[in-house]
Image (cartoon, rainbow, N blue to C red; front, side, top):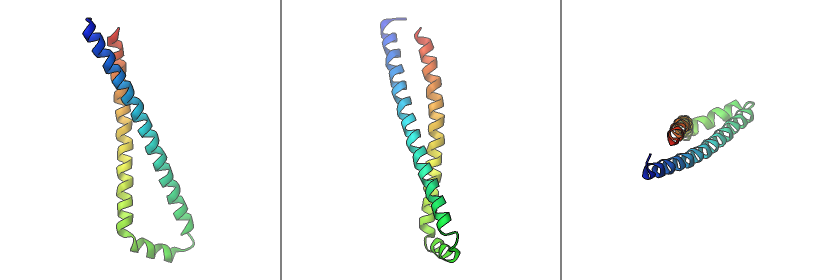
Length: 102
């Protein structure tokens, strides 16, 4: 292996490592957001459990907002799954390039 190739491989490894760390942080952030959303849903459910009429009226009134929140949650779940897959692929790429290094 020549000197330039080794340098490029080292640079690539460091960039993959940085990207992997960043995606792990993103995954943690998304997980925290999803957990908070889940807690909010539980609180709402418990709060309106004994107030079904008010719950129904508010759900009806806030249909557009509820639809938006539902789509937002789907989007966040999509990002979470995509981030998991990206971490998996980055790990594979890192291992492959690390093996080529030697």
